[in-house]
Image (cartoon, rainbow, N blue to C red; front, side, top):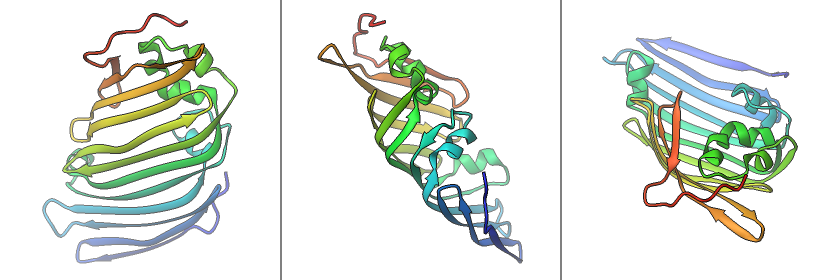
Length: 222
């Protein structure tokens, strides 16, 4: 991938490092960002703002080790701040917002498997059909995460694709790297809508899935 027109202006003054503006042309569109690290306080404070109205979906998926064969762009907005002298306390104090959106794009079905394979398996949805290789039209993908004192709450978490629809809600704890989400995958099979909420817990590196409390596990559709 080619990243032209990269520019960065940095100023260090009395323990405050200001990076502004940060600009460049990414595959699919431009990006602008700014960041401040203020080490004059104890602990230090940090802030980041980033706007990418149209990032190419392929390189973004590749960055997360997902199949990069994709069409379309993703809008990314980040506005976050925290305090601390190492990543863990910074994460535990995060405040701000993250927004992601994609409209009328195409991804490979194996992307669905990488993102939601364990969720589909938990509720016995036919992952071999939903997440098999081949183009999947993504009509809409929207995520809005608001963080307060290290706790992120999903205000929006939705996927509308040609193979799978999904809604979600819940929280993530950046301080101890834990998940507390409820995902509602929906697939239309033989004229019926299959919709069983799934609880996603565990840690960021080792998430766990189970039928949401109070729900009955469906019969296998495989």
